Amino acid sequence: MDTPIPDQGALLVERVKTFPQADRRELLKYVAELTVVGLVYFAVAKLGLTLASIHPSATPIWPTTGVTLAAVLLRGYRISPGIFAGALLANVTTAGSIFTSLGIATGNTLESLVGAYVVNQWSDGLNTFDTPVGVGKFALTCLVPSTMISATLGVGSLSLAGYARLAEFRAIWTTWWIGDLAGALVITPVIVLWSTRIHPSLERNIPARTVALYTSAIAIGLVAFSPLFPGIPGRPPLAFLAVLPLMWAAVRCDQRDTATTAFLLSCFAVWGAMANGGPFVRGNLNDSFLLLLAFMISVSVPSLALRAEVAVRKRHEQHVDFVMHELSHRSKNLLSVVQSMAHQVARRSDNFEAFFLGFSTRLRAFSETHDLLVRGNWHGAGIRELTQIQLAPFHNPDEDSIIAEGVDLTLTPKAAEQIGMALHELGTNAAKHGALSTATGMVRIRWELETDEAQNPRLRLTWKETGGPRVRPSQREGFGTLMITKAVPATLQGTASLTFEPQGVRWVLLTPSTNALI
Image (cartoon, rainbow, N blue to C red):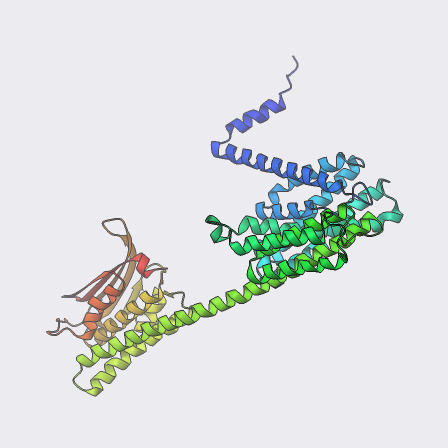
């Protein structure tokens, strides 16, 4: 008996059914995304091909390049099948053969993939419009590697299949390339910037200056480029009025508004050229379109670069203001701590020599902590390194008199300052009266993360002395005792306990980890 041939479609359906529900949703979402990309490509491509002036498959107005490049930058390389399908369908239904359609679709797909890859690797991806250098890199990427691939593969396929004469190769290639280039430089910034940057005030209303900017761009576009006012004397020089809204956008608005203004002006210029009106009309339609494309490129790239330069300068000014305010704030905090330290030591010193010794040693410990923070660009300090620095003067590193245990944690600058002073104070007392004053003494320092009764994470830091002489609490609380039991825990919004056990001094600090750790 013959073995029945399984229905491949049914098998595929069964396999899809066995996917987890989350995977099925993700697969359906991906298929829908590819479908949308393919349909958008097909629609925009057919619209652009209606303006083909030198060959049915080569049009100087090709916004599809900008759409697909923006799509890959925003959604990733995985949408390339949708681009290929849309390009193949658009070309199969236009001219040529399946061979030429495959070649053109391959070139169009590679154009967007290569362009997006170079921008991602070389020009900071979606942030490429943030700096003048990024704008220049984006323009250079569109100029050379990506658009040339599409023009070369597309025109090459048509020539090899006999649908384009070799004598027309250069003219068709130039039109194809410049059309793709203008589409990428004008369309991609608009889509990317509108997709990634939402103006804060748009949640309430559109800024008045943005409305005024777009209104002025539309007015200038109508007067200078549209076919509605053909009888205006001396009309060609009016095209230079486009500089006004572009400069306004670059200086007073943001990158998104600048890209949109260039797009609006380009739309009016295309409208005028299509209607055989406006300042770009030449002897034939293709020459008119090429001159128009030069205008589109010249208004888009320089205005984006200027806006990026203005944005960089503003960010620099804001950074300087922030640094100055932060420096003032930190200076006041440091001076306050030093003043409090001097006041407390002076109150408990019998003479100037005692004051000088106590104040200078504590100030030195404070400065060592700050040196550690400076080396870390003030982002924080590792608790293990902080412990080693503060206790280095009180023991021989070749001996095991101090043991530090715990996972690697990074303290905030404030916590590093406070815990550093506490460790130095404890080390000073241990070297004078406690475990570090004898050869058999030992100090064990341990830190760990735990949770309190409300399940909130907190840091526990324990100082435990053993093997030293018995230490009794002083009759009068000195500055060091007040600092490690009151000042330090209060600053970190925690608690601390100091006990004098028979084995030696024990100090425990408990503080919320959100106040002490990065």
